[in-house]
Image (cartoon, rainbow, N blue to C red):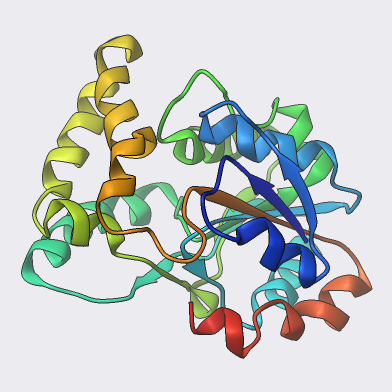
Length: 242
């Protein structure tokens, strides 16, 4: 397990190190760069990426191994359950669900074979946000050339934090989604200010902290028997309580 630390202000690196994780540091405040930094030191044949504020299902890695045992699968994702729900959060969720159904792309734990990851160039570091969506889009297109498809492991959904809703309000994500659609037709530089404020601003240190793993991307890499022998140890009781 590799933890890519992007300037965390809590004890993330210490906690992860004590649990046997490999710690790497990335100073650039670009989420895509953080993910790529972790991927560069990975030794396994399968890469699995998850965000710092997710709690993964205990059977995730077994199911990833099973999915990628098929040559017809290029990669995929698990999807998420939200840790709480409200009318505003449900409205944002309802907007996103049809896009997930239509594209087969989801969030949670994103996985693929390492060789395919580097064949398409990893995460695009010119994107300040939605880098995971852009990555899955390229992975899907790459797979289509070879008759492969993305898969969603819906029975192993991660639990994701609603800290952004706690911080900005339960209805704010409607605006975020609107800005994302604008990014499809407006040059990316017009949204850099928004992205810096929403995902990268240090001002959020004055508001509620985003869990015990604030401002860190956790990247998990698994291969072969390692998945079977370690999967139940990666998310133990202490980590579930975070």
